[in-house]
Length: 205
Image (cartoon, rainbow, N blue to C red; front, side, top):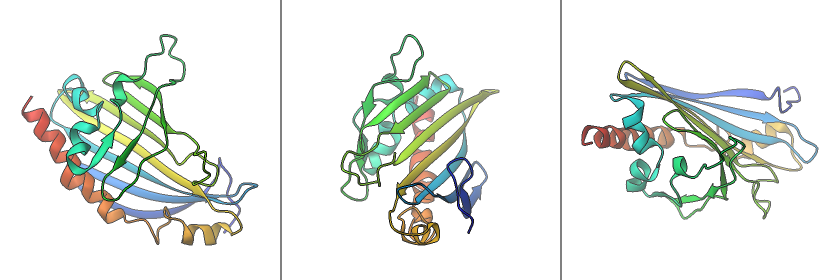
Protein backbone atom coordinates (compact mmCIF):
# COMPACT_ATOMS: atom_id res chain seq x y z
CA UNK A 1 0.00 0.00 0.00
CA UNK A 2 1.37 3.39 -0.98
CA UNK A 3 1.35 6.19 1.58
CA UNK A 4 -1.98 7.96 1.43
CA UNK A 5 -2.45 11.69 1.93
CA UNK A 6 -5.42 13.88 2.83
CA UNK A 7 -5.91 14.84 -0.82
CA UNK A 8 -5.00 11.41 -2.23
CA UNK A 9 -6.06 8.75 0.26
CA UNK A 10 -5.92 5.02 -0.33
CA UNK A 11 -9.44 3.92 -1.23
CA UNK A 12 -10.80 0.46 -0.51
CA UNK A 13 -14.10 -0.39 -2.14
CA UNK A 14 -16.77 -1.57 0.27
CA UNK A 15 -20.19 -3.01 -0.34
CA UNK A 16 -22.81 -1.44 -2.58
CA UNK A 17 -26.57 -2.03 -2.62
CA UNK A 18 -29.03 -1.03 -5.32
CA UNK A 19 -32.83 -1.10 -5.32
CA UNK A 20 -35.39 0.51 -7.66
CA UNK A 21 -35.60 3.81 -5.77
CA UNK A 22 -32.67 3.58 -3.34
CA UNK A 23 -28.95 2.94 -3.60
CA UNK A 24 -26.07 3.14 -1.16
CA UNK A 25 -22.34 2.61 -1.68
CA UNK A 26 -19.64 2.31 0.98
CA UNK A 27 -15.96 3.16 0.49
CA UNK A 28 -13.23 2.93 3.11
CA UNK A 29 -10.04 4.98 3.06
CA UNK A 30 -6.74 5.53 4.81
CA UNK A 31 -4.13 8.24 4.76
CA UNK A 32 -1.02 9.01 6.78
CA UNK A 33 -0.54 11.89 9.24
CA UNK A 34 2.34 12.79 11.56
CA UNK A 35 0.35 11.40 14.50
CA UNK A 36 -0.69 8.15 12.86
CA UNK A 37 -2.89 6.89 10.04
CA UNK A 38 -6.49 7.95 9.60
CA UNK A 39 -9.18 5.45 8.63
CA UNK A 40 -12.59 6.52 7.40
CA UNK A 41 -15.74 5.34 5.70
CA UNK A 42 -17.89 7.24 3.22
CA UNK A 43 -21.50 6.25 2.59
CA UNK A 44 -23.04 7.65 -0.61
CA UNK A 45 -26.82 7.47 -0.55
CA UNK A 46 -29.43 8.29 -3.21
CA UNK A 47 -33.21 7.89 -3.11
CA UNK A 48 -36.27 9.51 -4.63
CA UNK A 49 -39.32 10.89 -2.83
CA UNK A 50 -42.60 11.48 -4.62
CA UNK A 51 -43.04 15.13 -3.64
CA UNK A 52 -41.43 18.50 -4.41
CA UNK A 53 -38.58 19.70 -2.22
CA UNK A 54 -40.69 22.25 -0.31
CA UNK A 55 -42.77 19.35 1.02
CA UNK A 56 -39.80 17.04 1.59
CA UNK A 57 -37.91 19.80 3.42
CA UNK A 58 -40.40 19.87 6.28
CA UNK A 59 -39.24 16.39 7.30
CA UNK A 60 -35.72 16.22 5.88
CA UNK A 61 -34.56 19.27 7.84
CA UNK A 62 -35.44 17.50 11.11
CA UNK A 63 -33.93 14.02 11.36
CA UNK A 64 -36.02 13.41 14.48
CA UNK A 65 -39.08 12.97 12.26
CA UNK A 66 -37.77 9.86 10.50
CA UNK A 67 -34.87 8.61 12.67
CA UNK A 68 -36.46 9.37 16.04
CA UNK A 69 -38.97 6.49 15.88
CA UNK A 70 -36.00 4.12 15.60
CA UNK A 71 -34.08 5.39 18.60
CA UNK A 72 -31.84 8.14 17.20
CA UNK A 73 -32.51 11.52 18.79
CA UNK A 74 -31.15 14.94 17.78
CA UNK A 75 -30.91 17.82 20.23
CA UNK A 76 -32.10 20.33 17.65
CA UNK A 77 -33.69 20.76 14.24
CA UNK A 78 -30.74 20.65 11.90
CA UNK A 79 -32.31 22.80 9.19
CA UNK A 80 -33.39 25.58 11.58
CA UNK A 81 -30.12 26.12 13.45
CA UNK A 82 -28.25 28.02 10.76
CA UNK A 83 -28.82 31.77 11.21
CA UNK A 84 -25.83 33.58 9.65
CA UNK A 85 -27.10 36.60 7.73
CA UNK A 86 -23.67 36.86 6.06
CA UNK A 87 -23.87 33.24 4.86
CA UNK A 88 -20.65 32.59 6.80
CA UNK A 89 -19.91 29.18 8.34
CA UNK A 90 -22.57 28.43 10.96
CA UNK A 91 -21.76 28.44 14.67
CA UNK A 92 -24.78 26.60 16.09
CA UNK A 93 -24.31 23.01 17.20
CA UNK A 94 -26.36 19.94 17.97
CA UNK A 95 -25.71 16.46 19.30
CA UNK A 96 -27.33 13.15 18.48
CA UNK A 97 -27.33 9.73 20.02
CA UNK A 98 -29.25 6.75 21.29
CA UNK A 99 -30.07 4.25 18.56
CA UNK A 100 -29.00 0.66 19.02
CA UNK A 101 -26.49 1.33 21.77
CA UNK A 102 -25.81 3.96 24.43
CA UNK A 103 -23.89 6.73 22.68
CA UNK A 104 -23.94 10.46 22.12
CA UNK A 105 -22.06 12.33 19.42
CA UNK A 106 -19.68 15.20 20.00
CA UNK A 107 -21.14 18.67 19.36
CA UNK A 108 -21.76 18.92 15.63
CA UNK A 109 -21.55 22.29 13.92
CA UNK A 110 -24.25 23.23 11.43
CA UNK A 111 -21.91 24.56 8.75
CA UNK A 112 -24.45 25.61 6.14
CA UNK A 113 -28.14 25.27 5.37
CA UNK A 114 -29.78 26.25 2.09
CA UNK A 115 -33.50 25.74 2.76
CA UNK A 116 -35.10 23.09 0.55
CA UNK A 117 -31.69 22.30 -0.98
CA UNK A 118 -28.76 21.55 1.36
CA UNK A 119 -27.76 20.53 4.90
CA UNK A 120 -24.09 20.33 5.95
CA UNK A 121 -22.87 19.17 9.37
CA UNK A 122 -19.33 19.06 10.78
CA UNK A 123 -18.59 16.90 13.82
CA UNK A 124 -16.17 18.84 16.00
CA UNK A 125 -12.92 17.32 17.27
CA UNK A 126 -13.58 15.52 20.59
CA UNK A 127 -11.78 17.08 23.57
CA UNK A 128 -11.14 13.64 25.06
CA UNK A 129 -9.10 12.47 22.07
CA UNK A 130 -11.52 9.61 21.41
CA UNK A 131 -11.19 9.90 17.63
CA UNK A 132 -7.42 10.34 17.69
CA UNK A 133 -7.54 14.13 17.57
CA UNK A 134 -9.46 14.47 14.30
CA UNK A 135 -13.04 15.28 13.36
CA UNK A 136 -15.06 12.06 13.51
CA UNK A 137 -17.39 13.04 10.71
CA UNK A 138 -18.65 15.38 7.98
CA UNK A 139 -22.07 15.05 6.38
CA UNK A 140 -23.89 16.69 3.48
CA UNK A 141 -27.44 16.13 2.22
CA UNK A 142 -28.71 17.61 -1.05
CA UNK A 143 -32.30 17.86 -2.28
CA UNK A 144 -32.76 18.07 -6.07
CA UNK A 145 -36.31 18.92 -7.14
CA UNK A 146 -37.36 17.86 -10.66
CA UNK A 147 -40.88 17.47 -12.08
CA UNK A 148 -42.59 17.25 -8.69
CA UNK A 149 -40.19 14.65 -7.27
CA UNK A 150 -37.15 15.11 -5.04
CA UNK A 151 -33.94 13.19 -5.49
CA UNK A 152 -32.10 13.09 -2.16
CA UNK A 153 -28.34 12.53 -2.32
CA UNK A 154 -26.23 12.32 0.80
CA UNK A 155 -22.60 11.74 1.71
CA UNK A 156 -21.91 10.66 5.28
CA UNK A 157 -18.29 10.37 6.42
CA UNK A 158 -16.91 8.90 9.66
CA UNK A 159 -13.24 8.66 10.60
CA UNK A 160 -10.70 8.07 13.37
CA UNK A 161 -6.92 8.16 13.77
CA UNK A 162 -4.95 5.26 15.25
CA UNK A 163 -1.39 5.89 16.40
CA UNK A 164 1.54 3.50 16.26
CA UNK A 165 0.40 1.29 13.36
CA UNK A 166 0.66 1.21 9.58
CA UNK A 167 -2.17 2.26 7.30
CA UNK A 168 -2.91 -1.37 6.51
CA UNK A 169 -2.99 -2.30 10.21
CA UNK A 170 -5.21 0.70 10.98
CA UNK A 171 -7.61 -0.34 8.23
CA UNK A 172 -7.90 -3.79 9.80
CA UNK A 173 -8.31 -2.47 13.36
CA UNK A 174 -10.60 0.53 12.87
CA UNK A 175 -14.33 0.45 13.56
CA UNK A 176 -14.70 2.07 10.12
CA UNK A 177 -12.67 -0.54 8.25
CA UNK A 178 -14.23 -3.18 5.96
CA UNK A 179 -13.63 -5.92 8.54
CA UNK A 180 -15.45 -4.13 11.37
CA UNK A 181 -18.18 -1.86 10.02
CA UNK A 182 -21.59 -3.51 9.60
CA UNK A 183 -22.72 -2.14 6.24
CA UNK A 184 -25.66 -4.54 6.07
CA UNK A 185 -27.27 -3.12 9.22
CA UNK A 186 -26.49 0.44 8.15
CA UNK A 187 -28.09 -0.11 4.75
CA UNK A 188 -31.20 -1.73 6.25
CA UNK A 189 -31.77 1.25 8.56
CA UNK A 190 -32.20 3.42 5.48
CA UNK A 191 -34.02 0.89 3.30
CA UNK A 192 -36.40 -0.55 5.89
CA UNK A 193 -36.78 2.24 8.47
CA UNK A 194 -35.80 5.79 7.52
CA UNK A 195 -36.90 6.02 3.88
CA UNK A 196 -40.28 4.25 4.37
CA UNK A 197 -40.98 6.59 7.29
CA UNK A 198 -40.19 9.64 5.14
CA UNK A 199 -42.50 8.33 2.42
CA UNK A 200 -45.29 7.74 4.94
CA UNK A 201 -44.93 11.23 6.42
CA UNK A 202 -45.07 12.80 2.96
CA UNK A 203 -48.11 10.75 1.94
CA UNK A 204 -49.94 11.84 5.10
CA UNK A 205 -49.07 15.55 4.79
